[in-house]
Image (spheres, rainbow over the protein chains, first blue to last red):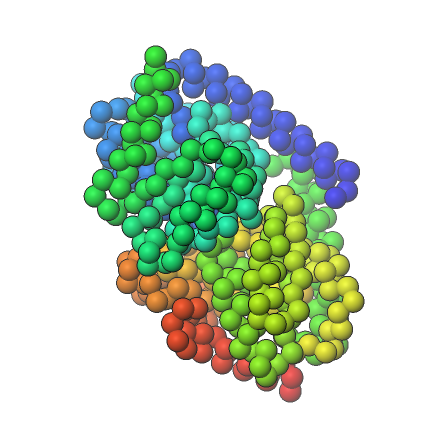
Length: 221
Length: 221
């Protein structure tokens, strides 16, 4: 890589870190718990988040931002939960950046929220380099993707806090070996918290919801 | 975006195009048909390619390059076909570039190959901007990913030549609506060639193999 390019990349990252630090300070001051979701396209981020918003929305004040290169589809899907949702359209940019979050939040009163969720662009590479000021980053791994994804995309697992296995209901149909997947995750990130989910099975999100409530209880103390 | 960053990006793309044009000229001179595969992580590129190499390898001289951020896993999986395979490890780079292809081909005699396959890094965004000198680019869309992926990642569908639907055997289990997916593809790229595949069902790659042989017959005329 030529030095000039490296220079520019480093500067973009530093600018982003400055924005992200300011965002995190604002989130803390407002008392809102901010959770981001990253994964491959099609791992089930939107379907999972829609149900999380619907269920948590019964007891908490929740909202969401969702990033895509194009279309408002995911905003519409998430808004079915009844929560306020805004779409961030990135055009050709393969990830969200902190200043996009800042712009998208314009006019929202953060101190009137308990949870803010941020769904990143579907991508296992680029989002890993950009802090969004979130408190917790969930990386989703679908049972359909193969057990070695953590080994092939180590940085995204290293920059996330929790691994969420999605579509566990079809694990058998797609030949998913959970032990192998867990071993892959641990090779990259020993002891990482792993939560199994299914957005289609009854109670399939219970473990995740309990985890989020526990995080919130800790934040709100 | 600041002008300076745009400058640098434009220059990288131009450099890549120059490399890609030179590669394509070499591929043409050698008479090798070069096919690249792009998709999300976990869409089934490697499993599909392993079977394509195994089957085509009975009648054609085939080889493959495979890109990943980390690990040699895919080289090992593809090499089970008996074909020569080389791994390109990109580190933190979210796509393959033409000069990586050039380097990886060092020492291979292109005129002794009928087909060269290039499996890109699993990513629906970044690879779309980089010509690799290939003759044909296949974009894979798995039935587990949701029918609206073409609408959300239009550029990758616009820069590919053929859409390959993978894991068609579990379409029903995952609630995949093929008509909706085809409509999404056509909205982005009217009339795009679409080929259904299953790497697990007997004969599940027949349509794709026939297509590739037809392309080769045309190239070799």
